Image (cartoon, rainbow, N blue to C red; front, side, top):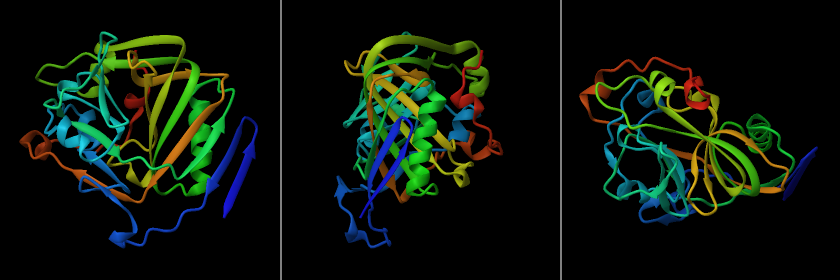
Length: 271
């Protein structure tokens, strides 16, 4: 069965997929990890209050997914996972292939399988882009977790990264006030990795969309703060009905106050 939704600037063609009923032989595995699972390292709230010490290696993280986003030990840059490679967009504007030995304090990854796709044109802002993505999710079930891969040939982006932090760690909002580095790239092409969590996950992750960008030549990237493009772009969505979180074992995590539900500091420029 096919469902087609049309609105100005967007055409969505989705293939209806069967409901997952918990039967483990109903989906495949890759390296022992369930392909239909979003694997998360820690909670976003933990990162927000300043728990920047990693406890899962990049090597281990790659065993749980080939697409996703996150950060690294000491909040040293932004993570973009794409096609099985983990990239580190650093505060000096460089992008490196992350060493397998690096530790990760926060990330969300999965194995990408395109469940449905849409074409988007004439996007004037990041809010407009995420608005179209949200409309697509609402048409396919807003209370599940999604990851989207959006490939674009010609766009203008504003991205950020963070200077590595030193102990005693400050909360993320405070770190962004002084140690956020922003970069503007016009007329570039690349890929946006966007993760969506429904509202009832507000104590585990940022609800709505969290987007990172990497250029086609893999030399520019970061957390996406601004976006525009007149060029058509393809957005492919993977719906993940399973969720698996690996919790930190440190005393800092065990004793910190995670009673916070605002993620404005994650998705905005704090200057």
